[in-house]
Length: 633
Image 1 (tube, one colour):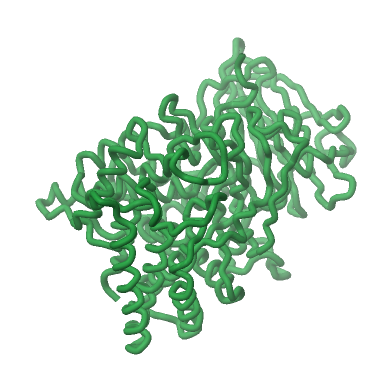
Image 2 (cartoon, helix red, strand yellow; image 1 turned 90 degrees about the horizontal axis):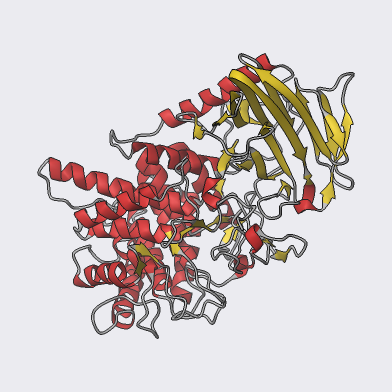
């Protein structure tokens, strides 16, 4: 029996940088949260087939002939071939001009630009030949499928309707040139389009109105396409066959960014399973501090300094506000992210429990100080200036790392078993001290430099003594010989030079022993007390880390081969989830995954730069991530 749920990789991703949506191959919007990325869902069929969806497409055909993004945009184009004709549907979340000319925005904390989210989901149709019977079926169910809509006509005809939700402020307004009818909480329309005919449907979810005519809809589509084209043109992409993967990753990262604050969510979804039918289901619609350094690496590498600046100031704001930095925050900087289980939802393909919120927000994870300090360091390097207001924050972060670096924690993978002395956490504490010492030199504070450099050197020696097994390979934590993919970050963070025998041995050990069909596991679940049952797939970010690490140690052919293989696992729209099942190639976990696309950028750039150096006859010494070498102050 086939599953009623589409494979995760077959969803398309839409964004206006405030709201996101996932569109199934059937033409149904099956995930959309309002009014923000981390708000309750209004379409939640991805987690339960009865939790709301919005389908638009041929009445008797569910499998499209083709799907693509209009090049350089976040506009999805689906081509349908039926027995009688061909239809093209374009889906997008509209972006328009800046709206707040007479009063200030209540949500924007970053500098306003010329563009702003319109808060409108637009779907246009064009019959290119023959005749196609088109079916619209929209059933919004707010609060993760718990609140039904009440529809009423909004005007004298059948082309405008408003949905309200008892007990909630949310209202949806649908405008279309189709004739709408109501069936309880569902709105439907059915018509036949013939060659040359066009139609549109717009669903507005704020005070900003949707288009009233097809001509207006097309104009706003063009404005949205122009926005994405102009944004992408600011990037610096190499002239290489893998350029399109870099561009789609950049667009995806932009789409996962909440423009009002600059925060980036780890993924657009919640509770898509890491194991088919399993319990490893988490809410990723939050901004992780550890993503910050990787985010800045990726954005600076591709030339998107404005987005890097916005994200830096988001994390700087929370660091300045909170004495103790959390692992993650809401996109508005919220600190309380309590986990809840939604028992009324069936879960994606039966994977339960379905969770919203994430209790990892108050875990003890020691890598946050290093992530913050590396971010400040990268930002300072990009500006050649250290703001005086940042110095108290830097001092607090480094001193916290020094005070707690000898304590166990939950590690980079946020395990829910017993705390351990994870090597990755120790390395990130060293990063905090090392980057703090370098920033002290920028400030010409020799006393603080000497204190922090001394602490960094002591911790470095401890890690090299207690975190290495008998064969010279870095382990997961001090009390085991088990491998952990996070050790692949050590050459990228410049903990040791890439030609150090321990680094080389560690990278090759992970490549040979912690992989399934060349794809990297985070760790082996039978060797790690992570507090969960069941296995998990290979983590795609770790596989891309391996590409970068192999390139760092001079294994360029092996790095290129693995990178080419990983790019072959991309979805048909060049998107990635969190994990890949190496036996089937099936994508698993939340989607699309920011961390994966960040690692892709770094890996692809490592391979491309190594190729360029070999072609020029230069030594193939890989640059530090993002061209920001932390070996220099």
